[in-house]
Amino acid sequence: MAARPSLRLALAFIAISSFVAAGPCDIYADGNTPCVAAHGTTRALYSAYSGPLYQVQRGSDNTTTEISPLSAGGVADADAQDTFCDGTTCLISVIYDQSGNGNDLTRAPPGGAATGPESDGYDNLASATGAPVTLDGSKAYGVFISPGTGYRNDETTGVATGDEPEGMYAVFDGTHYNDGCCFDYGNAETSDTDTGNGHMEAIYFGDNTFWGSGAGDGPWIMADLENGLFSGEDLDVNTGDPSISYRFLTAIIKGEADHWAIRGANAASGSLSTYYDGVRPDATGYDPMSKEGSILLGIGGDNSISGQGTLYEGVVTSGYPSDDTEASVQANIVAAKYATTSLTSGPSVDVGSSVSFQATTSGYTDYYLAHDGDTVNIQVVDSSSSTTLQEQASWNVVTGLGNSACVSFESVDTPGSYIVHIDFVLQVAAGDGTKQFNEDATFCPQDGLSGEGNSIRAWGYPTRYFRHYAELAYIASNSGPHAFDAPTSFNDDATWIIGDSFA
Ligand SMILES: *[C@@H]1O[C@H](CO)[C@@H](O)[C@H](O)[C@H]1NC(C)=O
Image (cartoon, helix red, strand yellow):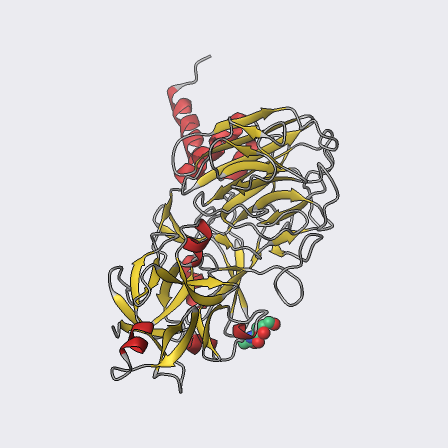
């Protein structure tokens, strides 16, 4: 029977308004596969959610504040973070669960494979400013995971265990990855140790080829099911799992009894593709699964901490989501309009210029960043210094070798050699063209932490900045496990006046 026109209009209005307002977790709930954990530092994942998205801790006094959406269901209030963190460093200390289950993510504890880098054996927290983006023009921050950084919750509520069905999606930076183990988001062991095949079900993203892999050179979306990154049924090459590196990437893993799937898409446009949809691996332990229900981010189930990547938002569901539900979630992600924004701030440091770095710490203002062979140090330099020393303290600014949104610094006296961090120590070394070298030679100038000049952030370790310490130079964090991470005089030691080069 046809509805009367006025009723049709009313129904259409309800349909449109609920479509516009729905968040990813409203869509999963409609599909009877509700989110049991919902993590998004960039936005609320339910239309009605207006609680805290994440907590930041600042270096100046170690106090914290919570960052919430601008309005219910909206984008994070990045201005609140920028105000709180002005003139100091900030870390993401809690990623809140928006589902109501309390499955918040905090600093991951030491595990069976690795002890974290912090002095208590825990993993590092992420910089709060390492992954700036915009959503429909509104600034927000993702979670930039460097090797050594990890989040976890081993005492969750509502997350699948055993062979129970679940789904998950994450929005990653498809250009931020490596071949270390393992940049994961999803379900893992509650003991932080490897308890055997089938004890995990997490999304992996990267170009590790130790276990399975996909077509081409990677990176790939794979499933970390423990003791293996699976691109399909076997620990083999699934040519149906493509190399995929969209700047904004939607990655999906879902699993139920003897059945699981890998799916992916460009998070900024278009629809999902299915890269695997089939039976569980035929090795012992994967059918049935023995999921344990911990949730982790950025690490393997045994706290393997060599992976890197960026999470903007992600959820874990109860039940196996339908492809239709996931299509609606993907449409919602596209409609959120993720886009890039500048990775630098402060006085501009122009590609093509040649510069010097003047120290700003009281008593050191006649010192400049220089090098002596491989060693980067600070030395007293002025216009009457020898030509050799003036050249040692001069640097050509080039497009960032590892990310064109930032810069690299080539030694004026040693063309082809760049400032690079090796074990957090600054050195001058010949570029070797590897992804690792290029990334470790890439720096993103920021507003100076002390209120003048620039602070020079390491692209791949955004908690760390150029710092002089005992007249040598490092990438240092504002408190941390090394002597050069000492918080005393951090802002001054990590702030430089960038001027014309000497030579
Ligand atoms: C903040 O905490 C760290 C680690 O406990 C400590 O080293 C540092 O001194 C603290 N900073 C301040 C300003 O209290």
